[in-house]
Length: 240
Image 1 (spheres, rainbow, N blue to C red):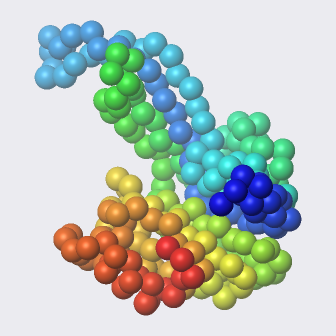
Image 2: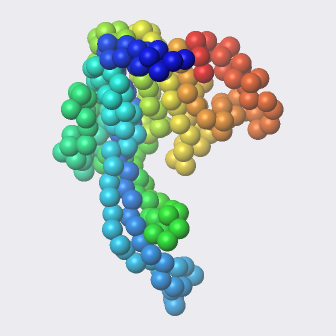
Image 3: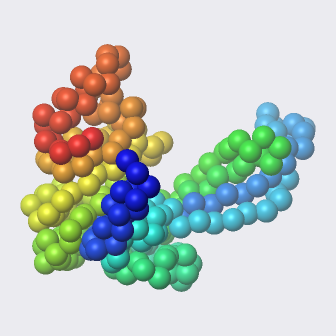
């Protein structure tokens, strides 16, 4: 593939109208330095140095897509308590048009990592989140939006972290309405074994890692190629 061909193919992406839907996550990193073992507890005490925050989850996906595609709309869920809306709007690309839905009585998902400055390794993580499925009124608002709008996009990208937005009703609506459906369904510490790509009845493109593939097929061992074929048979994507 010549550089001219690659450049031409990338330029074609600027014509696409894209919808990104998925969980909003605030990724926080608190950098610290180990001091010594506590005299009263069996733990190593760390001294705070600095911190920084990033727009993660579906927010990051939308920003990346906006670097390539002409129009990017974002559907995501914010908490009513500590929504971080102004922070999120400040971090989103100017090419991303967000549509925020609200979950009452909980914060926007925050994942706070404590990172050792000498090793750059995470020493602890705490999550502020509610990963219960969104309630009926919230779900219906999302579903109604997708019912009217999803078919208007050339491409729908799902960034599913298993934090409550992608309910069975929302998934059914997307699968019925999306013209080209791309799935990234992630496994993490909050949903291990419960957030599988096979909860979707179909897709056009699937992007998961090996662990997510093995969990979806209930196969700890065996060649990846055979497991890919099993998921392809079930979801019938054009590519994985």
